[in-house]
Image 1 (tube, rainbow, N blue to C red):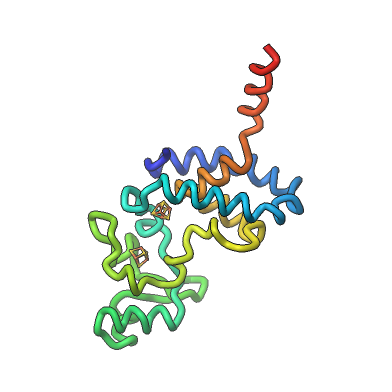
Image 2 (image 1 turned 90 degrees about the horizontal axis):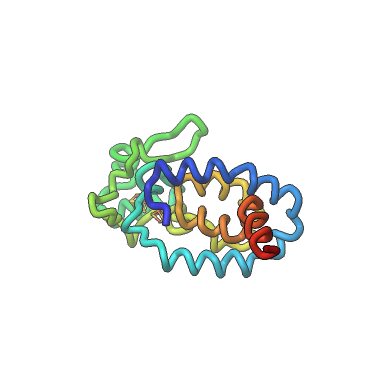
Amino acid sequence: MRLDPEQLRSDASKMAPVWKGYFKRNKSKLEKMDLEVHRLHDKWSERIDCLSCGNCCRSLGPRLIDKDVERLAKALRMKPAAVVDRYLHIDEDGDLVFKSMPCPFLGADNFCAVYEARPKACREYPHTDRKKFAQIFTLSVTNAETCPIVYEVLSELIPDPAIAKRDRSHESV
Ligand code: SF4
Ligand code: SF4
């Protein structure tokens, strides 16, 4: 289980060309594999405890929409403009994001202080339960560098050809 962020980044960046190559060759096959991806999502979401990780809240940060700001404002008993002023800014891509990371609502115990009111992007991360997963395959290869759930889903979905070859050679002995 890869909960060491540096190890995860290194492992995922080594696997990225393998996964991208598979996607290029098997795009239409992957388009019909949502059920398998979702099964793997459920399996690895159960095995990996987000409270032992917190990588996404520490390093990625969500893009917020107006409804997210309104929900946060209500939870924090602040005016939406005050939430924007205190916690948010527009980044170089024109997106509304947290001023700084780790997220200001992430606790030392990895709990989210605004869990019930967290932004939509936080609720949907890491997207491995999404319909039409093939459409976000390339994004998921990047997310595997941060999220161990995504890493394990992709690793099980697309076995490393070097390992598969080694296993086949064992079988023939
Ligand atoms: S709002 Fe909560 S879930 Fe979203 S990044 Fe911050 S701590 Fe994580
Ligand atoms: S969603 Fe992924 S990166 Fe975020 S806390 Fe859970 S396991 Fe870690």
